[in-house]
Picture: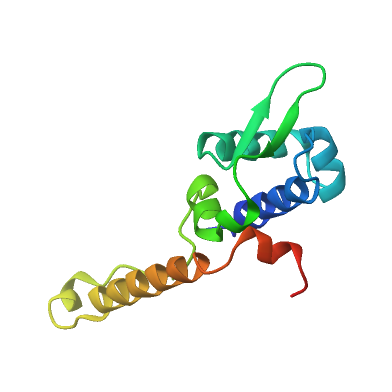
Amino acid sequence: MSKSTRLASATYILSCVAARGPDLVTTDEIARKIEDHPARVRQLVAALVKAGLVESVRGANGGIRLARAAEDIDLRQIYDAVADQPLVSIAWKEPVPTWANRCHVHPNFERLHDTIHERALDQLGTYRLSDMLGRA
């Protein structure tokens, strides 16, 4: 499984929008600022609009803006809007059939993965978009 950059890209997009305040910003302008392909930016923005994180205004003077304050948007919400794969991935092979009934490696790793994934998602909820605008 390849690594997804959707969460990071969507966070850059939202940071760019937040930095503009209430002013509308176009997806082409965002693509230039974050150095990403305009079609990819539009795809991610569509997911962010669907999730209610940004508002889209159509027309010659249109663009997007945050649907709510940056303090009210967390990374978990962004992840939920754009995720295309689990945040945490562990690669393992299926147990050998003759050995599967004798050991419990695979089920234990599945439980471990689920626990790590849930904790990572919980941690994302502690970071706000507004945190991304300041110093690290």
